[in-house]
Length: 108
Image (cartoon, one colour):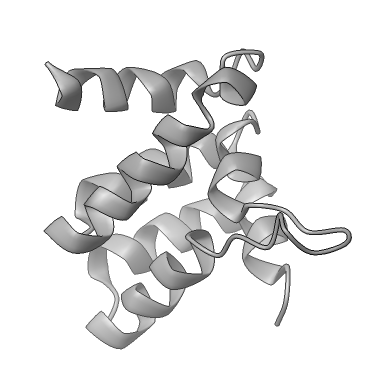
């Protein structure tokens, strides 16, 4: 459902389930979550970028880091592109710094 991943990832306990599916779930379930995270509707009215919103959240930023960790090279590149292109917006969030640190490690 639209926005469900955003809500689940921001929930203290549900976020653990999302992370668990990313690590231990079937490939099709993992793929579905990663694709949903990479959805970017900022060009539409009321649109948003899921991974950017998650990165700014005190709980969901852990889900983003786990997603980057378990993603395959093509998706990992997409995560890096989206996050890098939103670096300025993310730098204003105290929680997004953990995601930005992961990106910085990769850039070295």
